[in-house]
Image 1 (cartoon, rainbow, N blue to C red):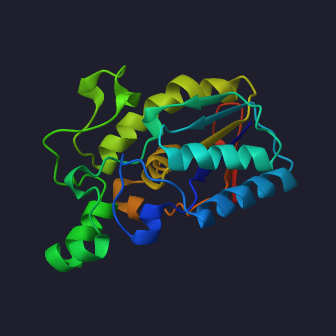
Image 2 (image 1 turned 30 degrees about the vertical axis):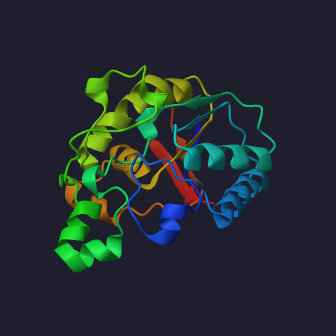
Length: 222
């Protein structure tokens, strides 16, 4: 039973070094090439999937599409879910990280970025488009810690990924740095104080293989 996690390719926000959260920004051309290269690695490794999952943000959606096209699996069913959206960075969204370091100090910015329980400053009101209209509005955060992001991501594992793996289905999950960190923390039972050590590079396939009782038997970066 195999699952591959991929963080989206470089986005415009990555390139310009600002917090994105649920802001919907496109990939750079480099990001598209990175996604295609990730798909080629998957093809070379001979990995075949039964289902793919992605967030509802275009940097993840397009990465997923480019990956599947490059590994000749574009025909796969793809489930789009808000549960693997990037962490909601509240009032920090759109702010340059270096400018925030100058204003609030490097230690505070590190806490916002890497702390497990640290909340960003919250927004008073979200202004999202209709992609979230059918979602219970009480579920939409105004800012999240990584702990809250983990709570949001876990139902995806419990309700979708784990049951599919138990049916001997292989899955591809394309998400974001923090939503995937949240999933990795849970899968590898990483203590909260060590979560800041989890690195999810852009467009680098991470392969997990599981035993019949969903214990990790192997993890490799392709």
